[in-house]
Length: 150
Image (cartoon, rainbow, N blue to C red; front, side, top):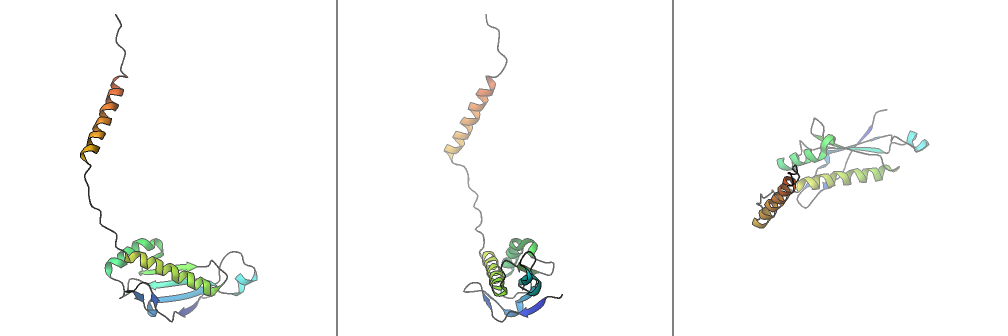
């Protein structure tokens, strides 16, 4: 059976600056796997949300790169982020969960990581490290063969 496609009618607001347009999001519904009795065989409750991330004009390039890294194997070769949800028996709730996950993923990608600032060890830390090395060397030096006693 082919999945049933639905275009998402409203924009998905990620933050005050970023909102994803409806043409970027596509939902398809399929029958969920696993237990559930006759409901599983009759109702298409599983949701597959597809986000056209690579073509999105709403995301700057650095955000797209971070999103690609964060999405991992959910990022396809075409630059689409695919999120599949089949947790509940309710199609509406699965849609909400999928949209929440996408919003969370994109919001996480919007935050640029702080650059690491290289630091040097303090003088006291260097002194303690060298004292520890000297102590360890003394311990090992005492493990040598015992000399003759006169």
